[in-house]
Image (cartoon, rainbow, N blue to C red; front, side, top):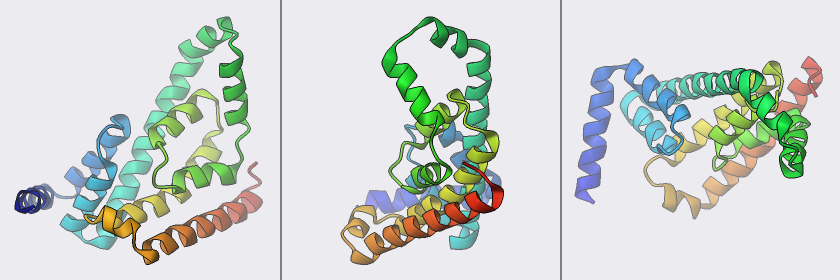
Length: 192
């Protein structure tokens, strides 16, 4: 246990000395390499820069990274994937693409809000299935706020927090608030 604490201290001090750019890059790179632990990186940012700045820099970085993944997949779909999928008439692929293309704004917000959603997969599929840029950006930015705050709140004591009633209550409230905000934004911006 002492080894884990010393590793956290060393990582936090490296981030502190490297500045906000290191914290940003850590989260940004994770968007392209989903096997990296986003929760640990957010916790490190919060430990290094404080709750408000750590959450803000993590949110900006994960939004920028997710948007880049979305744009790359959207470009690749136009260039290469549409021809490949057009030649393959597999029903399961076509059904999945059609189902995800028709995802509502609120459902997309909820996908990003849930802390255990494989966000890399959602970014890739959103780009491939031609989810509109406006719908993707707004839903991702709303949902990611709650997801980043969740991981910052959980921090180093993840397993203990899941058994805590207040953490579970926070997750439920965050989902309701995100859903409510998505409905308001959907109505105001006329996004379906």
